[in-house]
Each structure stands twice: as C-alpha cells, then as structure tokens.
Amino acid sequence: MVSTPIGAAGRVVGDGVDIMLADDPERFADTAARVATDVASQERRARAGRAQADTGCGWDPLAVRLHALLGSVANDRTRAVVRSASALIAGPADEL
Image (tube, rainbow, N blue to C red; front, side, top):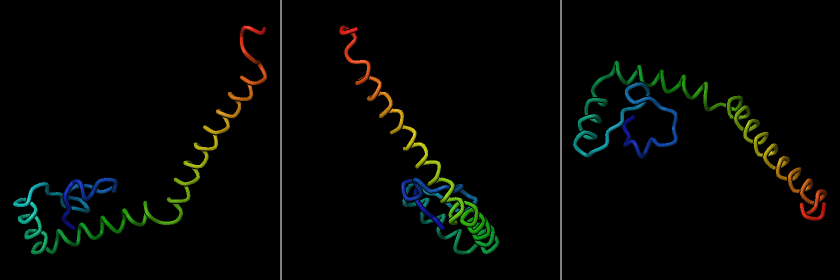
C-alpha cells in the first residue's frame, strides 16, 4: 500500500514495513510503480500488515483499549463528583 503521511495519520503503520509513505506527487508515483513491480516487497508488507491487524485490530485488543478508556473516563467523572460533593459539604471558606 502507498499512502501520504496525512492519509496514514492515526494508523499504526511503519513506513517501509507495512506501508510506503510518499508526500509529494512525483515520489508517490515512483513509490507506487516500485511497489507494483517488487513482488518480494509486496509479500513482506502483506505479512507485516496482516500481523499488525491480527495483534492490534481484533476484538481482544480493541476490548482492552476500550476497557482502559472507559475506566479512565469513569475515574475522571468520579473524581469530579467527589470534588463537587466535597465543595458542597464544606461550603464557602468564609463560613467556617
């Protein structure tokens, strides 16, 4: 696969490993032509891409990341609620 860096943004890919990145039209065309004719390189990138997909894009890794995200959000919300409740209970500092 050939992409621009912008097109690959947010993806966990390695330039030259499972994707080829090119940032200008001439380099993109040269890279695409090279990729189209280099069968050994195609096979290496295909294996690397599949391995990356198997380890990073299946349900198990997604569940782990989702669990961590939800735990983080829940912890942030809990801390905010506790701070708000503490402030309400304590009242303004000048009333003490």
